[in-house]
Image (cartoon, rainbow, N blue to C red; front, side, top):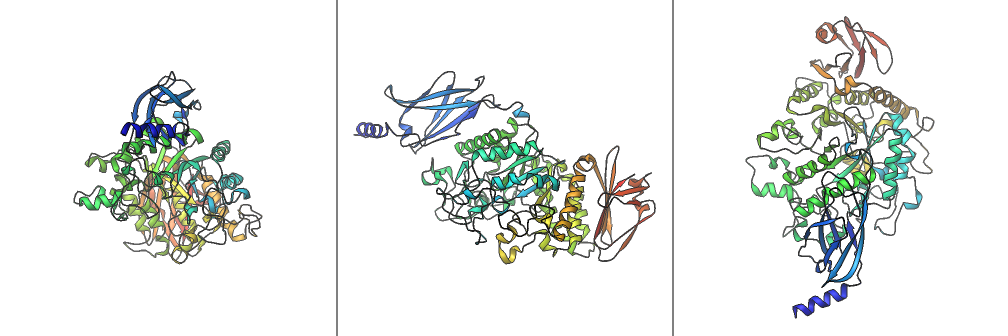
Length: 610
C-alpha cells in the first residue's frame, strides 16, 4: 500500500513545475563556496536529484514537508556557468531545471562601504516621491493606492527617489538608507514594508528588482551609497512560506499568540529567567509578523544567502538591520560574520534600541563588554539611541547639573566602553521617533543646534527626510503617519515643491540652506570624521568641545541658555594653543578666540581654528 501511494504521488507530480528556486541564481568566486538551493514544488522531495558537471552536490536535506528540497552544491573553482539539475525516479528522468552561476563585478568582495566620512539620509519610499504613476496599485498585492488615508499606500516609489538624487546630493548626504522595499502584501499598513512577504522580490508598488539595481547604478554615478534595510527577525504573516512552512520550527510557535516582552536586557542578564529570555527572543513582534527561528540552520542559511544575493545583485554599499537584537544572539552573530567574511569592508549597523552605554556596547563587534560573556556579535556598527534621546530633549532644557548640555557631556564620557566610537550611527530622529521639529516647536535655533552637534561629533550622522525643510508632525496625536508625511513636491499637483529652491517657501529654504551648507562642509573634513575629541564640563548650559588631528582643529560652542553668554577662552587654552581666530563655517565670519566669545541665546558656533 505504501509503495502504491508513493507511485501515485510521483505519477501526479511528473509534470508539475518547480514553483520556486531560491536563490534564483548565484555568483561564481564567492569566499564561501557552499551554496544551499531551496527547490519548492509539489512533492519535490520524493525525487532523486543530480546536477551537471562541473558542479558537485555535497548534501541533500529533506524536511517533514515534501514540498521542499534543500540541495547544497560546492562552487569552489567553478567559473560562471549554467548548469542543469535533473530530477528523476528509478533512473527515469522526470524533469530538469536550469540554474546559473553568474560573473561577479570586479573587486566585488572589496567594495567600500559607508563610514564616519558619510552623512546618511533616511527615506520612507512610499512617502518621498511618486515617480511612476503606473505602479501605484498592483493586481498581485492586496492594499491599493489611497493617498487620502494617512496610514495607506501613497504611491512613492523607486523612480521617485531616482528623480531626486540631485536634491539629496545638494543637501550634503552621501548615503541613502531606505526603509524596506521588498514585497509586503499585508492588507493594511503595508507602506512601512517591515512585514515582508517575499524577500527576493521588490514590492511592485515600488518598482521591480531591475529598478532597484538601477537605483544603485544611478546613485553610484553621483558618488552616493545605497544601504538596504534588512529584516532578520521576522517576516509578514502573508509571506508565501507561512502558508506551507518548510519545517514546523521555521518560525517560533506558541500554543497561544505570544508577543515579545521587548526586554532585550534578558539576553545578557545573568539573573534573567529562562522564560523571560525565551519570550524576548521568540515572541512575535506583532500578530502580523511571525518570528523567524534563526537557530534553525536552514533558516539562518536562507537569510544569509538572501542578504548576500542582494549585495551582489543590486551592488549594495551597506546594511541597516531592523530589530537586530531580537534574534537569537549566536545565530545573528553567525549571519553577520558570514556577510563580513564575504565583504571585509562592508558596514552593517544594527538597530539596538538600548539606553545604556554598556548594553549598547555589548552588541558592537569586539566589545569588551561582550567579551565578559564570551560573546562577539561581529556587528560593525550600532545605532546610538542614547544620543538620540538626548537630542530630542536637551534644547528644551535650561540646564542644571543633570539636564541640558550635561546630558551630552555624560554620554560622551562613556565613549571608552565602545570598541569603535567612530562607527556608531548617530541621529536625532528616525521613522519611529518624534520629529525633531515637533519636539522643538519648529524653533529654527534648536534645529541648528541639533544638526550642528550631529555634524561635528564622533560617528556617522543620519538625518530623516523632510526635517531639512522644517517638516514636523506629532506622533502622540497622529500616530506613525504623522511622522511619515508625504514630502511636498513629490506628487503631481502638489502646490509646494520643496525639491527646488524656487518651489520652497522662505522658511523651508532657511532650513535647507543651513543643513546643506553644514553637511557639504563636513564632507571633506577628516578632522571631524576621524579626529580626536576633547570636551569641557558644561557651565551655565554652555558646552564646548574640539575635534582635532595633527594638522587641523575645529572648535564647537553651544549656548543652550535662554540668555546671551560670554565665554572666557582661557579655560580652553590646552586646545586653542597658538590659534588666534576661528572661521565660522556657516557665516564665513572670522571670530577672535584669544580672550572671549559672546554667543546669542540658543545658538551654536562651529569654528575652524586658524
